[in-house]
Structures are given as structure tokens and as C-alpha cells.
Amino acid sequence: MARKRKKAGAISENKFAIIFVTGVVLSVAIILGVKVNSIKQELAKRESYNQKVIEELESEDERSKKLEEQRKYVQTDSYIIEMAREKLGLVFPDEIAIKAEK
Image (tube, rainbow, N blue to C red; front, side):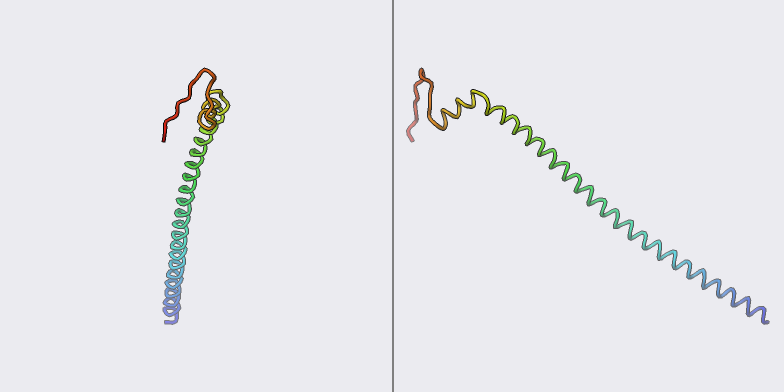
């Protein structure tokens, strides 16, 4: 009889240990699942940010090209002549300036 009680107690302890270990494993699995999900969300945010930065970089590259073209244009004679006519109202000696009345 004493042996049956010891055996029943051992089985009861084994069941408790199995349930405890199962609970711990499930808890760790849940915690890891939550952590993986938060890492995925953070990764998605960073990917979105990286894409935004790449788009801004491309936009600034286009702007830089346009500014370089503008810089080259303002160094030409045609730009100087255009500005002299528009801003200062100057004309070449053999030209006649006609202005519309406002």
C-alpha cells in the first residue's frame, strides 16, 4: 500500500512538472511571438522611412541637375542679353525699342 501511495504521489508530481513545463514553454512562445511581431512592425517602419529618404534623395538630385543647368545658362551671352532687355530696358544700337502702353 505504501508503495502505491508513493507511486501515485510520483505520478502526481510528474503531472505537475509536465503542466508547469508546458506552461513555461507556452509563456515563452507567446512572449517570443509578441516580440517578433513588434520587430516586424519596426522593420516595416524603417523600410518606409528608407523609401521616403530614397525618394527625397532622387528629388534633390533632380533639383541639383536643374540648378546646374541654370548655372550654366546664366553664364551665357543670351542670358545676359535677355536680362539687359527685361530688367534694364536696354537694346542694341541698331534696334528700335517698342513698348506697349499699359
